[in-house]
Image (tube, rainbow, N blue to C red; front, side):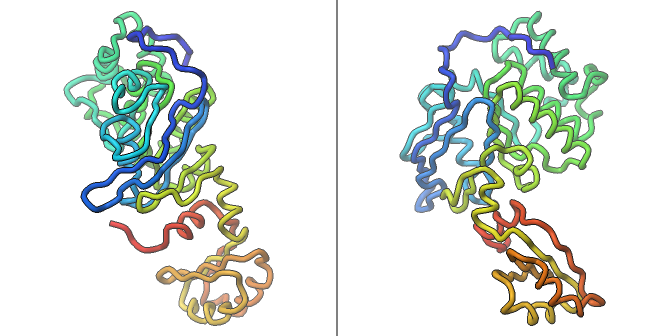
Length: 319
């Protein structure tokens, strides 16, 4: 996409510092602390991720950051403005892509972009230029006149992203942007998000895909029960919390493998019919289960962000 400045409603200038600053944020609903003493900030040109199980407080945190809910304590500064008091001014420099598409089915692809641009005061001339660029950016060049019902799920997600960029925002909030997409569509979305960061945009991303968080985010906040469990670069979190090598085992003889390894590895975990051995040296572990190979499937891999997520938040199912 070509970088063409789009005329916007006049808002006070923002210093080139943190675009979002969250300090000691608290939010309660009744007796339940949904967000508890959460602090973080997002810098220009940074993709910052929030990961956590269902009910961890991710959506509430985003609503507080956007001024859609008022905190019980703490503060939010978005694009230099205090939120929620000046949320409207702040959101003039913010793009939002919700988990579920809110595209208008009565309009074409181009009309969805044009109508959204009018909310931000863009002129017809400015929108014409922006729409052409955004259709190219979203790989929808031949779909300008298509109705929403004619688009695939991946096309709709790319259009939602393009629409959030119509006013050339400085920070984009993305709530699970690739849920339900096939691998090709996910990789295309990833490529476009990397382009935005390379252009100096900031991104706040929530996702349940740990590979997505690991690939896209410079820093991650691990959230559970409304509390910050840790925050750092993905590789730093992996090195801090889990052993470097993992052996996954499953099959009819997994119980025997568990007995063999019970006292041989740093950490052994069972989830259903799968056994996970976490270790600093995989060689003796693999040798110990070699005799079970006819009834045991074995996968040796490096530790990843999913291992961190499960260690910090547990393997219990969340509804």
